Image (tube, rainbow, N blue to C red; front, side):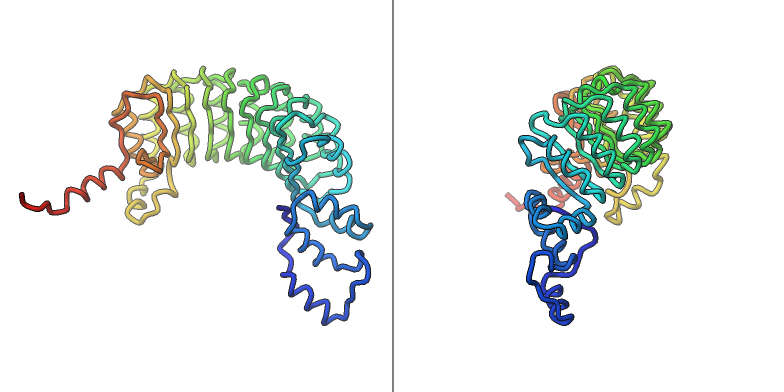
Length: 360
């Protein structure tokens, strides 16, 4: 559904206002802008595009009022569609262009950068045809980006990502999952130097990064809340120690298949929880523990870990759950960690033990 500007009045209120003001509708162009935008907020994106061609009045209204557009439904000719729409939709703040098959080319992204200067959220995931040209154009045309999804874009280079961060310094959410060629230690150093407001970063399967890159990231992005390092096979405990020391707001950490991770990393996380959040246990009693500390940790296939180290993390962060239906501590493939349990299981055991048993 399309989101348009601030929420306008309900339809009936719009009609009542029109009646009071003696406004009559004889042609499509007579519909007041606020009523038109309210109607368009109730239909899908395809109908909004169709509506923009009804008359000049509607085209201008949509051009100035549309702030969010999703074109992921377009299975063919998305590139041509973007080229035609970008000059008209200059107030766009959110644009979703996720594709099932590669369609977008650099000229479409350049059109976005040339016209949509207020863009804050952009999804270009699975755009396999895009090259560094796209990132260079976004760097100059869309400096207000706060959320950028480039997952699966395999043709970008690390120097182009680094260049982008020099201009898009307001980024808070960045998805680079699967961008193997684009993510290196140089990339993470640039992100750490330029994107200090970053809160969420997905580096899944970017197997070229090492501890040096993650440490640069940790030092430069202290507000990091979510970090996915799944499949980053070169990192060791040093990366986790740096994150534990510098990223005190970290809530979600993915370490799937990071087989160089040992107990030292787990104990550093546990220690950071005690050191940085001395009031966490007090919050637990108030039912607010989920506001602090790690809420999600994936250590699947980290086979070097022992139960005592992982249990220490689980005990430090009560929002981590191993119980059924609430798996926020994921340990798939770690058969030696089956004894690790969250507080819920212990509480359930105590509750069961407190019930009187009938005499036999």
